[in-house]
Image (cartoon, rainbow, N blue to C red; front, top):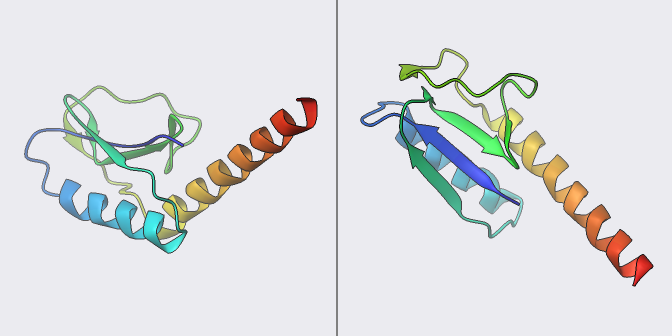
Length: 98
């Protein structure tokens, strides 16, 4: 599972978003790291396996700006749960075909 936090340099919301993601990972017992990307992004943006937890169908913004729809605990937990279930299915399918 790939968990990323996209932020622009000095984003005042990024530290809280990072803590939230770490708390959600811990709550679900997922040891994966959070990869922090600093650049021209709508910040903070949390991606789980490349999908924005707040706007799954949207393209990633490349503008340095604060997001109005900051990641929520519910959305991060839901995205992590879906990704973990997908990983479990993939592992099961690999074992079945081996």
